[in-house]
Length: 205
Image 1: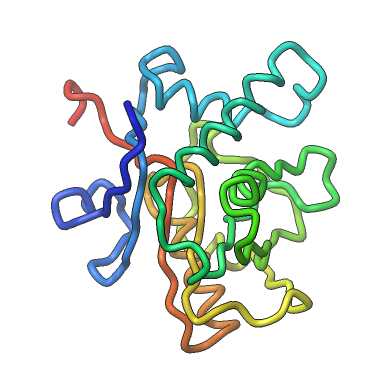
Image 2: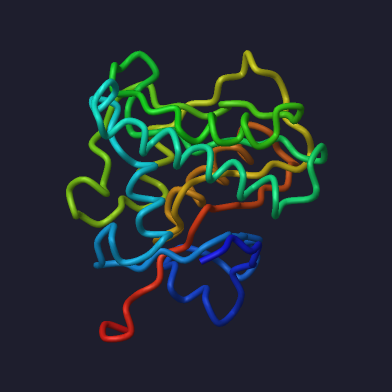
């Protein structure tokens, strides 16, 4: 499945519980839930991208590196409005000083847009367990936002901010980021861009 920039619309928004009609969110691919890494190209890509940091130095690590490069290439080929935004990756579940801190998203952005405004404006000061590793439901936006902090030393972003993440499921992380950034920088516009959005198999609806 090739990458193609698409927007979440009225037909697809219901798949993402927390998104509102006023949210402007884009995605490049579709990831099929409840199917393994071998289901298709995108499932394999996301699985490799999310390989944990404790696999560094093992035979699994090159798959993560290739996934980062592939996602960066997808962005370069599909997103044309470089230079107009501040790109802000969703922080990983681990705190910056945690050995398992995964900087995959900021690495994708900096490979894709080396001359653009990429800033890790939002971070988690305390590590949590990533929901994709537990099978549990994602926390609601308010709970996530309560654990976020803004790195004010990085300055004020441009008036338009793009929140970047690997996979759009419920939309909880996007809404938490949107809330956090607008509270810190009133008046900014916050958009979302995801490598993939979650879809369900035809037999599960």
